[in-house]
Image (cartoon, rainbow, N blue to C red; front, side, top):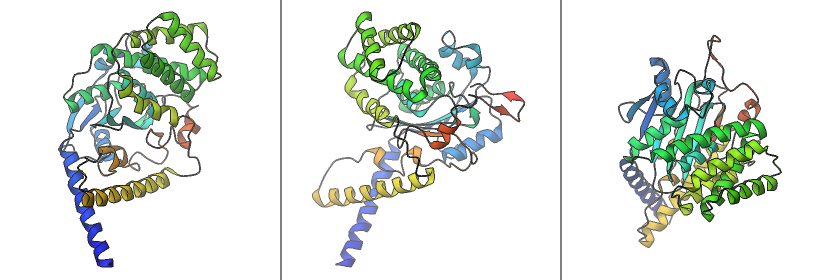
Length: 352
């Protein structure tokens, strides 16, 4: 009997390897690098992403491309003159949008996930990071560019612009009421506006004020007007609420769900064990029941780029954030009150 069980497990592991290889082959992965990174910093990012530059498509993002979306809605200080942040994109077929960030001190993973839904993206894995601490506003440009290349799917320009508008609006609101509160508020308002197909400005403003009151958040008249205007533009687009629901629900569930009693290493370790057990059991069941269901790419931690990063390569005190596990790590919460940008060798301020 023991020998039979071992044989079954071995078969399941083989099947798991087959499924993993198939999922990887069907998915194009793209890395974007900030144009102002040095060669050594670029090499650091390859190591962090856990990829060989010859095995992925690599594209560069510069400050001119950032300005295409940020100019006019963000301050000159926010836009800056250089691009450092990088991104690693993996299109998926289900599971919503999963995001991990490292060394981004102003933009969070949930902010990126929410704004990507506005850009018209429904499923993908994203790692946005930098070898040095930056605000992260420039990361969105690289993510959108990478997604178009990886998926061979041109995103609607108006939706891309709206995504940038939303990121800046959420970030600025977060400075006033708190990042998590801002992300949750914007996400809930957007969800209701899209779900109910509300287009009248008065009705949208009512939704804004009701959600703010429910969240015990006090908004100024200017903030209400800005959010209402943004949601009016979003309402005019043809978003499918059912396609966005997975990501919006995840964002709302993540807010406030902090795992302060476990280190990042412990959370990653136990998550991988649980996922591996689930994958192994699913493969055994599918093999003996004849199930033809394709495994979702997100289930296999071997395929998920969020789980394959080399977290030690960026140093010991890196600001990290991951929508897969929690809204933010304790390390990030301790650092959120610090400056949005630090310096290279303590001489040059970083705005990205």
